[in-house]
Amino acid sequence: NVGAGFKLVSYRVLDREPIMALKVEVVNVSGDIVCSIDAMTKWTVGDLKRNIEACTGIGYHDHKLLCAGCILQDKEGLEVYLDRKEAGETIFEVTLVKKTKLVDFEHWQAEIAKDWKQLKRAPNDVRSDTTSVLLAIRQDGQAFKYAMGEARCDRECVLEAVRRTPSMISRIDGPGEALDLLYQDREIIQTAVGQDGKLLKFAAKSLLADRDLIELAVSQPDCGEVLRLAADKLKNDRDLVMTAIQNSSGINWKDIGASLCSDRELVLANIRRGHFWLYSLPESLRADAEVAAIVLQSGTAGARELQNLDASLRDNRELVLTAVTIDGTTLAHASHGLRQDKDIVRAAMRSSYDAFQYADMTLRSDKEFVLEIVQQVPISTKLFTSSSMGYSILKHVSMTLQADRQVVVAIVSRCPWDLLYADKDLRNDLDVVLAVLSEEGDRDVQPVAGHPTDALRQKAAKGRTSKKKQMKAELLEIVRGKIKECERMWNHRQDARYLLMKE
Image (cartoon, rainbow, N blue to C red; front, side, top):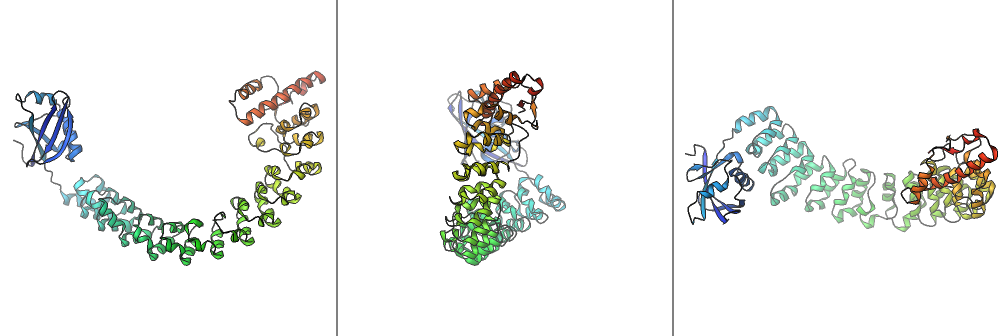
């Protein structure tokens, strides 16, 4: 007696390997095969039921297994069943009893009408019912994410969900053909794009040639960049491109037609909106002084576009001065003649001390100019910090000035780490080392004893330390040797407290 509300389905078990493996073929009452399962004799009936659930979708608790009119217990092993077979029998008939559940749709629809979130806990049949799902969606478009089955690809459900919550267009699901039809539906796409232009990415390719739809998308705030999705013929539509530029922070030149890249008005509009990368522009525009001026004045990123300007503009004193004032390192891209201009180099140094290395060698060999430039560099109050060791002056001067005592003392008194780039003889000069240690005692110092110089030097030798730490170890070694010399010469213990810097 299987009881009311149950549906009988029979299936057979084929014994391929009687001891270890079984081939289970699930069939319906008509004898048609539904699915096949590879089972093991050590399985329990519960294991077999779980595999049937995975293959057929019939819930574990929604069916029972019977053999010869007896219900198989979930904890019973399959080998017990095999022991009951008659000698020589290889095909076993087992009956699957499926319980038919009756869903109270009216009850669930009443619950959903009170609170759309009840759809989340409703049975799958309710979540697949378009009427129930629509009832929830009309309260909040977010309800669509709890829909299942046919409701996920029902046009009316999709359109209502997108109308209320446009991002729900990403939740559409269903068979490939049904999915394609929904993404080709102009009304659905237009409803989504009208609220968020970036959702144009879900439109079918056939809709990307629709000018009105593309214009609607690029007209949305901050959505001009979706122009890249449009058909090629629309990327050459000047009015459409201008609309996209005005509703974006600038669009990539690669996303518009080649014929419009040389349109000066469009280029200037795009630059003013924030897209000032010039490498993809025609040479005629990269040689345009007005375009260059707008780009260079637009901040650090714009100033660095000096390198992409035409050579004639990189020799324009006014434009280069604008760039180096914002970012001194752009001096590297100025013409050779302007890198010899003292005013240009001074302006670059005020913006970045790293700019000195890009000055022409004639200036880096000019003792008077180098001493002047050094005065712009602030005095470091700590010998070793990650920020203070980021630039160097002495490293980039001529070899003649690296051996000039006055220049070296002036530089290392402000940039103590530059002692490593001084001439070898000056590196061991007492006056130079004292300049590193600062006579005024305005740098933080600590006694020699206990400082980890040896450990740093050993790590540097083994290659287990960074370049800055290796420089630190070398500099500490030089200073440490001079400390001992100072102590021997002066015999003043008080002086030793000012001889070594903190890390």
